[in-house]
Amino acid sequence: MLTEEEITSWKTAVNQVIDEHKLKFIQLEVTRACNLRCVHCGSPTENTDSSSLLTRNEIKGVLEKIAEEIIEPTHFNHLMFVGGEPFSRKDLLDIIRDTYDIRGKDGERVYTNTQIQTNGIYIGEHPETLDILKQIGVTGFGISIDGLEKTHNAFRGRKDAFSKTYKAVKEALDRDFSVSVSTVVNQSNVGELPKLSRLIREELRPNYWRIMLLDPIGRARLNKSYLLSPEQIQEAIAFIYKEHVEHIKEAYLEGKGTKIELGCGGWCGKELEGMIRPYLWHCIAGISMLGIMYDGAIGGCTNIPRDFLEGNIRKDDVTEVWNNRFQRYREFDWKKTSECETCSEWNACDGGPMHYRMGNGDMIFCLYKTLYEGKDFRDKVTDEVLSTKAGN
Amino acid sequence: MKLPKVDSKLEEIARRGVKKMVEDAPYSATRGVYSIYGDFPSDPLLANYFQRVYQK
Image (cartoon, rainbow over all chains, first blue to last red; front, side, top):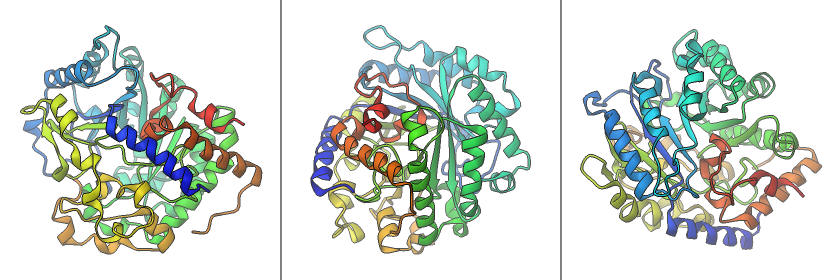
């Protein structure tokens, strides 16, 4: 259990990180096209203009500029290609090859940890591509498995999705890539988490298992029946807690097995922070993370509402944007409304993840209040709220 | 929130790790999604994070 003094000490360090806002992570959305049409997709194809897609040269140019002007090599961690489905883009390998050769002011390669977030279908069908990806500097993958076979296939809308994704994970691990399996917990799979654990931990054995709660953004906002009740969210968090503790020796002390964590859900209080992931949570969007959308738009990550975009690489100087904008990501008083106004956790939480904020400042979900007050935020997901561009 | 019962010795390792995460700030504070996408830290201060946090 964290003490108030410990939280204050940790937050002082976080405030320093916010002040310095050194870039550590880039999410680069190379496309919104996809070979699947998943129920929950946070970055769907609908309502996107494919003619505005960034070109290979534009991507190379902005990554070179960021490498030269923003990144301090000793602080940078990874570049993640996201979508849509990145492998839907025919010149993806060329883009990655371009990235490999980009060097910083010191002449050293900058993007040495380059990863791809994928549904795994393409890799499952073409595992030989992994050998090429290895040669051109890809170090790992985030691959989605959203349930046991039947559930995953229904959720992903394709009857062979599970078998191909399963194969993709195995083939990538066999070639010593780092693999993070991600699972979005929702009404259809919350009851099968223990069985899914056996499948992931004992059969697949990826490096990481990242569990997220279904957010009402993107395509998921269209079907609210998949959203979890407060009791189900508590059940999911209790599951992650138990899995984290019970596997802590093998995962962290012995350095083998699968590490588990809750991804991006928000601050969860002094009892649980650090017990459901190997760090204390704070939103890093626009602080350590830069998101570049398929059309060049610049945000704090690629999952935030477009109301929080800070510019576009086609008309703005990305360095100027990173250095001098992003105030809404780095100063938090504007978030201190409604539930946050009198919340005991405010000083640690700073108003939660940016992707839970609407353009008008409203918050559509709070993990802490769900866990400790049983608050049901599904009522917040009204058509009116959704019309203000939750998701993108 | 009611937490499930777990092995007390393992819980002690986990809780001790949380204390060390605080001591390890600001490095632990900058992790964010770092852990999920692989341990290839170019920052030497982030290297061996898990060992620092969870070893006695």
